[in-house]
Length: 178
Image 1 (tube, helix red, strand yellow):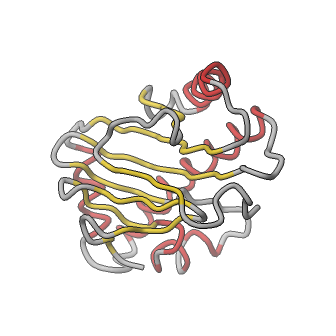
Image 2 (image 1 turned 30 degrees about the vertical axis):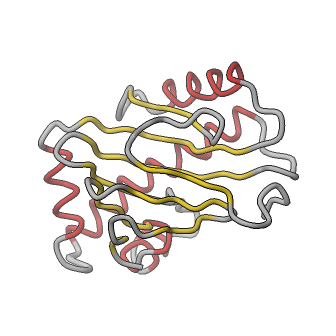
């Protein structure tokens, strides 16, 4: 999948994301640069979306929907997401240097060097999640990702981040898929 058209809905599990026109977004874990690049390493991971918003923000978005299913323990989830972010950074750098598919990844590296804020967002849906639990997960991710950014957030439908995109449930939401 290449770049997602602004305003076009994109499905991730039982959630639909719609990014405002100020965004440029790629579905990283389905992109040929990932699949033909770093994914060849058996233990590599990938976030769901990588995006650029205007001239101010670079964003990595990981989506997890555990509604109707048990989920990983907080420490395991935090470590897993941090690993996905680390491998995504490495994968994008590698895709650029291997010139795997044009200028998409040069655009990302240029954005990183422009001192844009780098935001990591875990979109987490789950049964009975509290704001306190989201705060614990946010703090854990901040500790694991402090080598990269201090801008880390855990959000969901009940507590959206206000970053310029919308999310809605699709039919079957709450039945889970993991």
